[in-house]
Image (cartoon, rainbow over all chains, first blue to last red; front, side, top):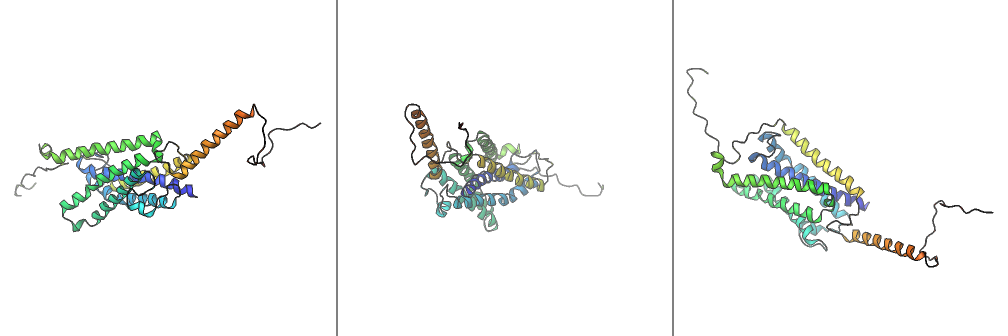
Length: 180
Length: 113
């Protein structure tokens, strides 16, 4: 039975990574060429607003399975406070940080009306850092990323998001080029 | 357009990042949501199947103690088996309490006269 939790933890970790990729990509899409072949901005925005409903269950399943599983030996404190585990402190700690950042982004999004638009945007940009820490966490600790296929898919999605993030950054830094 | 209607002002040029990008994809919002859900579910199911067939990944970047113990046990038992088989050719095999009996059907048959 214990190994079932271990399998669920591994699978839900990859599912959470996939859900976060969809969320970040759909967040970048309205200001870049990403997903332009697929849908208009309104539909992509609707997808982005909806993605917490796939991220949260996947992340909770990952954390819950790790807590119940005896293989990983993760405690409740390790879920929220990074670098406390008895092994793989950096690799697991990055996952803890990404979870903390995910909570920050979700909570500030739900409290968006209490922030000014500028302040909320800065809070929302934390999600980029959350994605990077989650990617590093998956690379440094992901058991299944030893599979070439899974590793290639993970790298491809991360490179795609990195590309569109740079495109978004370039347009934000040089808006005159858009107006021209 | 009616000739008496006032002339509308020109539409201001839209500015800012992302303006001017043509997006004409046909997928509706519900289609994107369904696609996102199915993609995530597919990753979960596929990964679960993969994890089930690859329970102990000895070259994984992290080796929790339990997995490490299993890997060490496997290595030790393999080494013991090698050592036993290499010495069995030259020395007399002796039964020890570590040799277990089995309930399996015999593979060979001893001919009785």
